[in-house]
Amino acid sequence: MDRLNYRELIQTVIQQHANEYPPNNEIQANLLFDERRDRYLLLYIGWRGEERFHGCPIHIDLIDGKIWIQQDFTEEGLAQQLVELGVPKSDIILGFRAPYVRQFTGFAVA
Image (cartoon, rainbow, N blue to C red; front, side, top):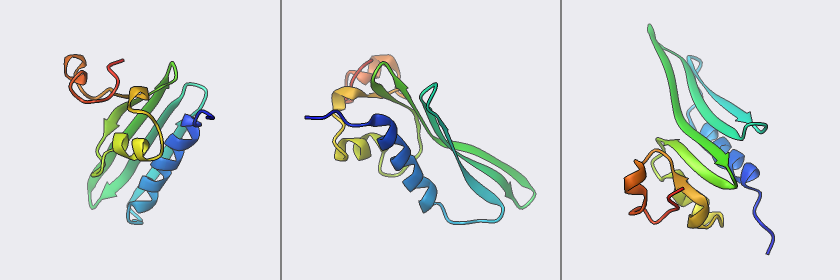
């Protein structure tokens, strides 16, 4: 079986979330895909009235062939989405969980 292209999968998942965000003239969804360093982020930047809005709901890194989910503020959960796309749980690390908790998540510990 061919190995999945994790870069492509990550970018597809983040793009889907960016597309789901309602268009807004004040807040824009920004995709940051750094394939050289294998860092992938979704940023929301703009203004809500007079209040500055800057948030990073998704941050994923590829480190030594494993998918590290560093930030996940999605409702369905990025890890579950990746599993549904065929990524084995042994290749996904919930980086936003404390290292001593990861052993109880069902995903890789590091």
